[in-house]
Amino acid sequence: MLKSSPFLRLLGHVTPHRAVLVLAVVLMVAESAIALAHPWLASRFAGLVLDGADSLRADLIALMVLWAFLLAAQGVLSFGNRYLLGSTGETMLAGLRTRLYDHLQSLPLDYFHQRRRGEVLALLGNDAERISNFVTSTLVGLLPLLVTFFGAFVLMFRISPEIALLALVLVPLFFLAMKLIGRRLRPLSSQWIREHARMFATLEENIGMLPAIKSFTRERLESDRFEESNRSLMRIAKRQLLVESVLSPAVQLFAGLGLLALLFLAAVQLEVGRLQPEDLIAVLLYAMLMTRPISGLAGVYGSVQTARGAAERLIEAFAAAPEPDDHGAGELGPVSGAIRFEGVSFAYPTGPRVLDKLDLHIRAGETVAITGENGSGKSTLIHLLMRFADPAAGRILIDGTDIQSVRIVSLRRHIGLVAQNVLLLNGSVRENIAYGAPGADPDAIEQAARAAQAHDFICRLPNGYDTVIGDQGIRLSGGQRQRLSLARALLKDPPILVLDEATSMFDPSGELAFLEECREVLASRTVIVITHRPASLALADRVVKMVGGRVQEASAAAV
Image (cartoon, rainbow, N blue to C red; front, side, top):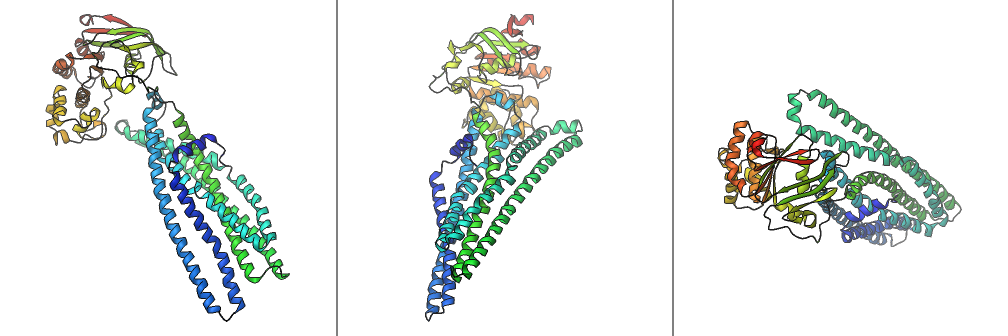
């Protein structure tokens, strides 16, 4: 059932708590061993009653005391095992989620550009939980099931070898039934997981699109789209439930028929004197113990198929290559801010070439505006500078150092980015400004806000710097969000500052005022302004126009 080596490797990654799991298995085996003692005790009880010896009452009391002690021990073991497995399962789930989250953070942005966010979030939710539950609820319980089965077989063999061998012969028939009925579970499980991720992605997307949904009156259409996905998930779940509902009862039916065959053989042996009456009770109870693991193995088979569906998605995520390994690379700094692109070419995996042997030199402390038509590669230039991707050819240098020879964290520490699409936390103004400098002094936060010309409007907010701004700063205007983004970048105090359409939310007069107020702050840094707006172009010492994946320079006054 566990033939997939990637599946086994995944289980190896998510089971670091092997000692605790081994202890849980030991407790479960001990519990199974006590369960195996109950048929023997029942047989002894029947033997004492049938013999009618003078010491019957004393013998019965001793037997009952022993039996009660074993029942109490079994209860303690069951409690310890349940709590231990439950606690370990939660710890394992938390560890898997953390490891998966860290891996997702290490992946290049292109991985997320090719997937819906809801599908990625489903990995951390449903898929991780299914694997954790499989390990703690199914995999760990497999050995005790086998101990119970073979223990019952051995003890039954001591009573009647013929009956025990008949029980063993029937086992392959049970597994054949499981294989035939359960072979549909794996594809159904994979379909369910994919559809669940798709529905989750639709829900996450629609919540973010709610203003657009309302403004275009698409409520009915989006409701129908979600309902279609929801019903598809329901249909798959019901088909999966049907197979699971048939599997366990079918195996139980075969096990029950096998039990009847064993009882018939036991009755025949009792009739010819090869079996004692008290042994008949033991055989019956041991046969019932053997049917329980067989039914349990049917559940194990179903759980394996379900877990493999979740494992396929997790294996795919873990197999995705992270950003380039910069272990052992040097640190970049201190930086004056001179930037040089030398023969840089780049194309996205599914698109044409964006940059073609591009050459560009930006002097330290210079403000350069980059303009060009949409799709000309302006933002791609910044992505390469920050190593969100690497060029197919050529190199990028900062102060003469190839950025691919230094640690990515060290590189990005020296670059501040104010993007057109401002990304903000659902937290306070203070938390958002200090996002790139956790634990920053309140005075430094205020100083950065003043430099970004954001202090005045922050003071007018209900709770000032402690005002919560909502998801993506929904409670602020577009211009206010831009100012917070600039304050966040300035608190980082980078020698290189990138303004990617950073004034797009301003009206012309507001843009002029903003740029004039920020001129002093920008003067001490190397600034790259990506824009097509005249006011922003006027801020630059030099304008670079991108044409055909290369650059064409012009003076700011001429634009």
